Image (cartoon, rainbow, N blue to C red; front, side):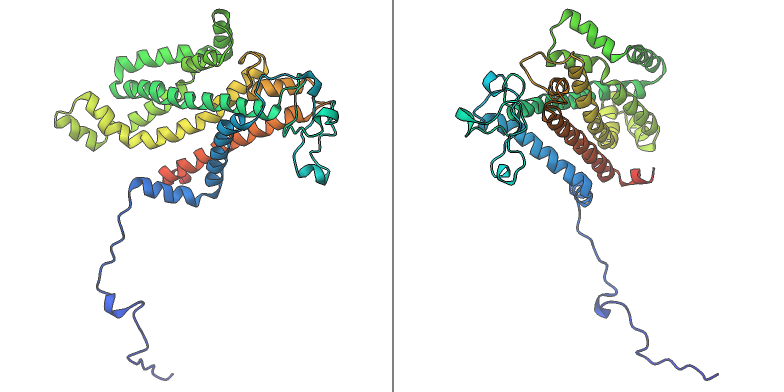
Length: 333
């Protein structure tokens, strides 16, 4: 076997020889920017966020730009099927499948989502109903943060007798079905969006309180908390300056996951007749009204169901992406 001879240029350093001894310093990145970079990389979460933004804009703008209102009735236009400009020329959404037809004085009339049995424009009513769902979603987040989070922080941090008492109170409240609480509220209050919000305030914070307590119990025994105690920091300072910033990302993510549940809760209550009263609209009441005539006018139930499904799916996608962006290690759990 011949001896192998190596020449000087057989092996070379990868990259530029001039910079091999120089340290590469990556540019500093803030936590918010880092979260945004990871969030953008998640296509499903990004699509969900865009859809939520579109739905919010439509819920605000669409009723304002329409010539109709959510309670404007015209029995001459009852149960008209959807009619959309341009698409009607293709033979779809041409308004010919409804009970009332776009003829005579209504030949140049367009109802993008059709009308209901009282002749009210469903385009306006669907987006008005979406507003109600978004109101409930916003209040669900507020309730989670200001009631559930504070309750869990106090219970988990102080522990002992305080924790035992607060946990027993939580178990008692949680043992009462939410539907029973709402039914009792309806005996002393009129059906309205405020009744639903009060029902959420009574029981909607329990899940967040449990998650917060578990996070506090995990982190309060760590060294930096002991260091804060040793330096004489007050309980208030430790809770809101040392513990809360380290778990706030997880809490925000969990509150995002509570939004679809709150939206479905409102829709379910409206569907069973415990929601907001007529003539106000919500996605649940629209589904309930359309379900009664689903075989004759299926569009009256299909359209609000699609909007509700897209809204709930979008919040789930965005919450899932936000969780992975804030804490990438959650993917491995």
